[in-house]
Length: 161
Image (cartoon, rainbow, N blue to C red):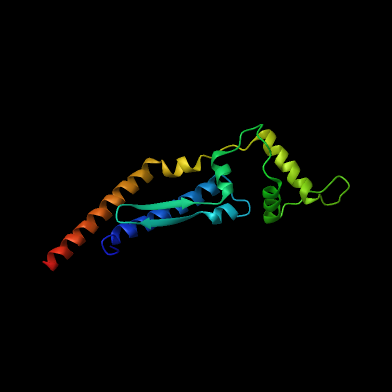
């Protein structure tokens, strides 16, 4: 089975790498790389069975909010998520008295602003994966890979006869 799907495997791995690369470029273009956590979490996984092959692009939980946004007036994000992000990017606020602001206070202020103002969606998934050029790349690539695999299998079967 592995030999039969050789070109399709190669194509789907290339497709996964392209999807990751294009998604990371879109994160940079939309100025959504603060700590690098989401950027570095973008990855892919391929799966092959006799009836189905797929390449799945995935990222951390924050990507969902980067892509879809968060409506203004929604509830605050979990404080722990905001605190972890603050620590990861090294954000520091100073109070009026010159002392550093406590982490929980910073997380509350940021969370309250997100709840009040929302987060503008980037639509990265649509921009990357629904572009005509990406769809043409997929159709052309999988058609060629499938055809090459069929040719290889046909030649192999003919040699066995």
